[in-house]
Length: 627
Image 1 (tube, rainbow, N blue to C red):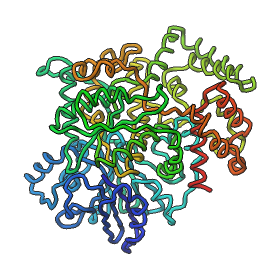
Image 2: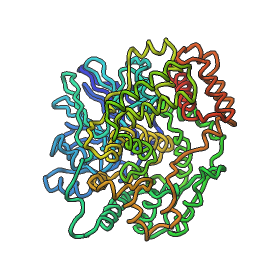
Image 3: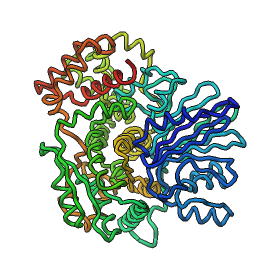
Image 4: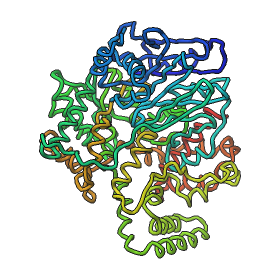
């Protein structure tokens, strides 16, 4: 696990090592154990290393092939690197290290772009070929590891952290207001955009090629299959047995490490599943880390404790209190662009807590997308009961109702009626976008100033988030695939990567094993979701391995008492940021609407916490990166 950076230029001059070193110095936390640089005509590469596998000095970055014609900087873990290494040895490749980075380099030598299909793991890497003056970079299938880049003429710069590019004096940046509008819809900036003009994310499951002529090609190399016919093998007979086998294999493969490994134990089904299977693979007690809150509604410590007791783990607990708000400016700086998933706070806290005892943890990330766990799937799908009404009638009535409500002054009741009309008259993609939106369309209309509207220049929600859909598709399967394409890599994985790596902690997610996901993608919806009952097949497979209270526990998410905190401990900070002269001069939002949201939230009239949090984070981001 590391932080990588680099620069490719058309110039024959050797790239300045100092420029690469400066980028790497901004992400020491991603790799505090070692640093290395390679500079030559046309290229500069750098890496900060968090040593997990092969702790010897010869494994320090960057690494090259036998004749030094190819160089690699690598961030991540390849869980099947040992069999790959043996296959490459059989082909005559020579290795100097025992780790996975060198395997990726030789695999590229052997197979070119096709090397990606052999890699099982999480990764973002860049390989420089000095003979062709070509840079090849790729990102893992679910975006567990980040990759940002910017291009100026025939030059390209890339890094694991957007801060490295923003702070580079040679690459000017300015706010991307269209991306900021998307952020206010989704709570994150969707790939490939960032909150800065001319800085891009390499999307998950994509590769990038930068040629000697300065051309950039970006293409997808993998996506979850839409259907399978061989998802249940004859050997194991039934789905539960095969699912459990695949879960065990996924957990086992992620236990390879030369440093201690622990587990994020939240108290939910997903983390409980990984903990149970992990405990059965390791002879000594595993270290488990859980956090809770004083507010009982958000406290899952009793559930986590029941799993820890059952498996005799070395269990550690931390209670998070509102004073943690002091880390919010730190998170704004670390994320580099506005990011409003408030669970970043507990993720940061549990990462900081766990790092005191281990260097690597496993987590339960990915189970909700794979096994249909989210409440919003049900909340969206239930509108399908109106689809028996002819589409032209629904659309006409929905448009009329929304139009009538839109003529009225903004009110909570009229806004909700307008939203209901929109849901009634829409198809699944529009319903899903509306259901998940932080600031709804009618709220943006009431909140955005004419200046902000002009800066958007007609921008509407990012059409790249419109996954292909037709009426014959299964609604649940479409929503799951949508999250796997967008929400999972652009929000959840970003949250986990930044919060954990800010504490020099590696997080591995067995439920994101791509072969496991491919298997689950082929299962019928009825095995994963039945009305409000989620993760049906996973619960069945784990029924003998987890306490009943965890198996029967409703989905709660990794939330914080944000609504209460914004009424109490954070109330003053909220008003100071959103209503002061500095924010008003920015001229993006109507101050009267901001005052209304804050007042209604403080009085308990309406819960505006998600909207207010998104606006607060945005304002703090402007102050950190733009002002």
